[in-house]
Length: 271
Ligand SMILES: NC(=O)C1=CN([C@@H]2O[C@H](COP(=O)(O)OP(=O)(O)OC[C@H]3O[C@@H](n4cnc5c(N)ncnc54)[C@H](OP(=O)(O)O)[C@@H]3O)[C@@H](O)[C@H]2O)C=CC1
Ligand SMILES: O=C(O)[C@@H]1CCC=N1
Image 1 (tube, protein in one colour):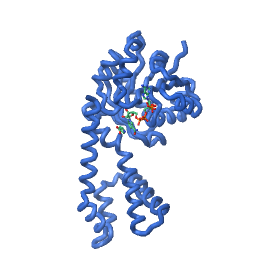
Image 2 (cartoon, rainbow, N blue to C red; image 1 turned 90 degrees about the vertical axis):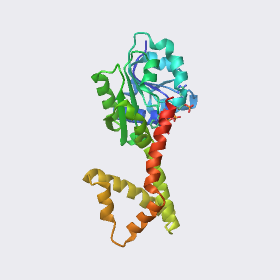
Image 3 (cartoon, rainbow, N blue to C red; image 1 turned 180 degrees about the horizontal axis):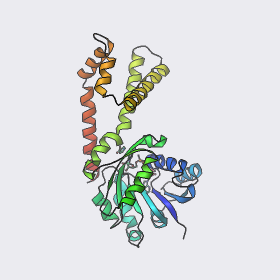
Image 4 (spheres, helix red, strand yellow; image 1 turned 120 degrees about the horizontal axis):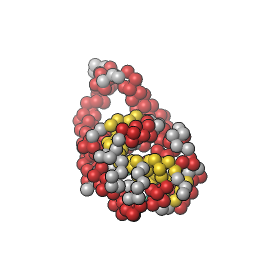
């Protein structure tokens, strides 16, 4: 029987982000990967782009994968997939199952994959360029070698941290969803620049590089964000005037509430 080391169920945004990097970094060779996707056009694209095996049948991916099966479908289709795989999971075949699904708990995953090693993971889209942030939580049947495999895999797409499962919804609300919050901020900063008279292209360049540069500065110097804010803020100057307006508009509160709301939504998706 044909076998593959890495099987991906769901080759959408997150699945492709992981796949592209794992193949580019030679964590898995293209010939060692199989992906299942419902749409023939998407299958063709993935096969052409990454030279991997593709199928429309999730059961084929499960049966033919020896090492790691990554579930990257929407949480809403998880139950259907669990049912579909039910008669192929219990065949003495024990790959490591890694789920990146928001909300779906280890207990649900372990009910679908009885006694298999399962890891719940939450990556984010900067994984595409190797700048991802992934949290992982091990299930009841995982051993250190499985955690090591997951660490190696997600290290290829960025930073990795291990957390207890009870924190995975909060991780989802912060770093899982976070790239969208930051993208919104870049867009809004550019809009502010346009409102203040800058040409759009220049406003966008200034906004993006300001966010990127500030993140790099915080990362490299380990400065506390409050200290960096103090360094930018001249007495009676422009920055404190801008910050006062941000506070009046509830900027910090908006971000705090966004993470909390997304965390609650992640919990709901797991029910
Ligand atoms: N996007 C992100 O930033 C992040 C997403 N996640 C998680 O990753 C998972 C996927 O999200 P995302 O990539 O954004 O979503 P996408 O919709 O882009 O990807 C899901 C893929 O699964 C395919 N699919 C649908 N039904 C099935 C099925 N029955 N069998 C196999 N494949 C199927 C979809 O095909 P089709 O389009 O034809 O339906 C699609 O290509 C979610 O659970 C999400 O919580 C985690 C971290 C970050
Ligand atoms: O929006 C979502 O539900 C997924 C999970 C984290 C990022 N995207």
